[in-house]
Length: 608
Ligand code: M6R
Image (cartoon, rainbow, N blue to C red; front, side, top):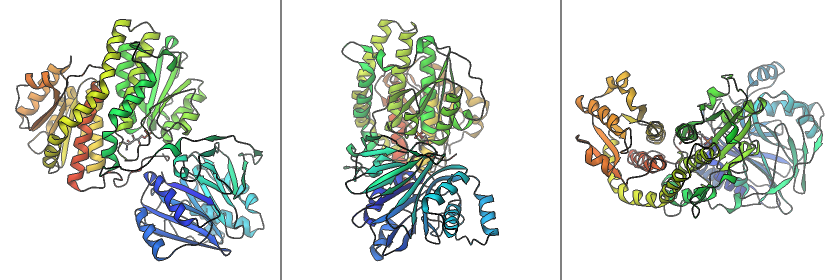
């Protein structure tokens, strides 16, 4: 949450800071601000709301200076007002921060007792006061940083300007990532490499506990003990990504339509289509010798993991223990020997997922990560990285990352099945043949169903509540469908296992609560049909998502039946993701919400 950037440059930096912040806006968009030093004077511009408001402010009141820092905020402490917007100032010190200073309350109380006057409700402002205090005591910026940072508890990535040292920016990281970019006679700081992509592709990642001093000519890195350390730089792929909407109205729409291509790219990484086999060399985890696999993730990535659990257990006979990362990290679950852990994350920076990973690392488990951002912290801290080749996902609602995660998990479950001798060569070949068809089916489905979904979504936009039902791998899809609808349309939605309906949620059924049933004509179909009958008998309105066989055998009146081509079991969750994504997208468009940047959310959740 929150994006930070810093530039020690040779030309005006305010427009470049804003440009970098645009690439970080997915991390938060409650307010934004930039600060620079010009003619020995620290100054800032801040604005509530989206970055466009800050741009307007800067148009009216330009901010000169060749060294500066910037911030786009996802509010944690204090309302999204201008006074809470970063950068925060105190006596010639300016600070931007991503994360949460957990001990800010006692620090603030102590500082107030010592005479400090605070101007915001944020946790961040204590950092500016601490640093300013040490400067007043006569410490250099490096010494002040070396004294202040160890006092901070919690998660932070910081960038700091000192008015009387106008050529340097200090940065620090504990938890959230911080990247240093090497330019030609210029240096940069940013929450990720994509933010810095227009300026440089040579990146040094700070390690946890590091802090850094950058000037136009170079960098000095210190570890948490204050010793000078070297961290290798690397070439980032961030610059290769074009982050624009193309001809689409929203990033989410673009990303939904990119799925045939990115799923195909991802599958090719794990599957040898010519040989009809999965690529065993892609495994990197010793699946053959495991008794159990622990999995964890958040949000949509967690639902991908839930589907993966069905596959690992069915095809590889490998028991899977899965939990949302915010619970996993504190559950103190026993982690006996012959167990590995697999984490799933688009951003690779989600705080709870990373903490769960570190819990497993501390318990000596082998760690695998299914991640989209290759240079992320989760990827860097894992033994085995299983990339999803989705490209940058900018819309807050995860779409293409989800289907790419499913692609990787399907391939890994097959690899595990082969390694454990539970998947026959014939079954493997059949499943690979099914995977080959996925990109084509994606194209067909989008073309075939989108017009119908536009019409349906106009109707759905009238409702206040929607229920999603599914069985087997369609149950996590029901959860995902509900999440997608609520996060971008703000319509209340719940996902349930179809068999659970009669254990409570059936009490909600009436004509005001449409029920979206995800029911491929698979081994669960008849049972799901019985649940649909129960809904129909109580006047519920059904939207059935099924295939031709399912549509033909469902003898029931529906509000709409969305028919997708028949898909083999291993690819059905990917194919059925499309209708649920399109329903959420078009309903949100009709509701007039901010589809790519829904209220209160951020793309990368780097705080607990
Ligand atoms: O970057 P991650 O995959 O770790 O993010 C996990 C969740 O925050 C994310 O999937 C979230 O639920 C999305 N907004 C859902 O669309």
